[in-house]
Length: 342
Image (cartoon, rainbow, N blue to C red; front, side):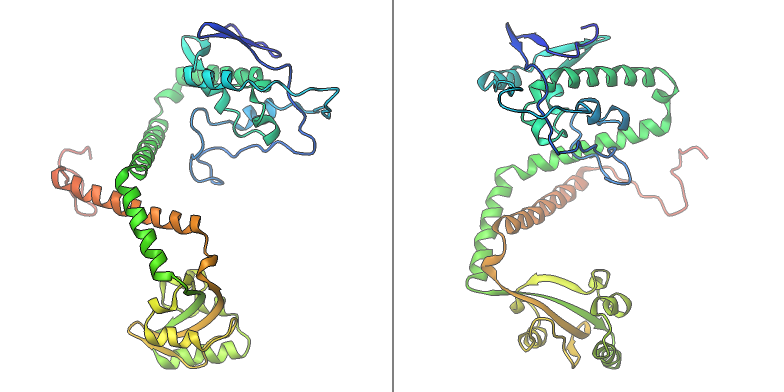
């Protein structure tokens, strides 16, 4: 296809002609949101870039008109919804363009518009020509980059390899997460979760853990004088929760040591213990933030947390099993493999 038309587009695919809508619908007040570069300092990863990550200057603004006209039912009818025909196109996924021998498929074009504002995502067939033009431009620029020194740059090759490995690992984890073993274990653990928490109450608390009782008493005196609990936890606590200002999140008091749960039972929301609470880890200064009925906890949140833990356990088990048949060599710090280049 020598250059995609910028306007209405008719695509001949899988034996029938599909006519796409007359033009884009209006955005109204909604401003197009330009996504950050995948792998940038802002996003930190490349999630959501299934086919073509979007460069800044090949952004959604190249698809959305700069000055959309307000749409009215009489003046600008919405593009027709294609229903079953659109589903057929997704299933058949025909080639809609070929750039120097590289094919671009229908699904790639449609999915490249998923970051557009909602009004456009609901009518992607209306901006299909602009989306296709954008992919054609990207393909040409990629070929230009690959033909020069960039394609052979070791740093680029290394970054591509790391990205490919991350995609493979994510796909493997997704496959494992959707398997019957995880589903069965999730059902079992959720039932146990409901039985354990039936009619119970959860609390959200924070604590400052000190090595000695005198240290704990000194912290309590500062809190009485008005010191901020979270800041004191970050400065003085020896627990891993110090980085979170001592926050322990929501939990059932019965899961804690008796002295800890007993101290919580005597507190009202916003209060802290005026006597250090001992445990095998040291001396605690505890603050009760909130009490809530366990029924308030989101079922979806609980399931997501349980599934994440199960998946982590399954992946760890897989790794342990693979180690048994793998050839693994470890080299002391500062040394190199015998056959490495010095």
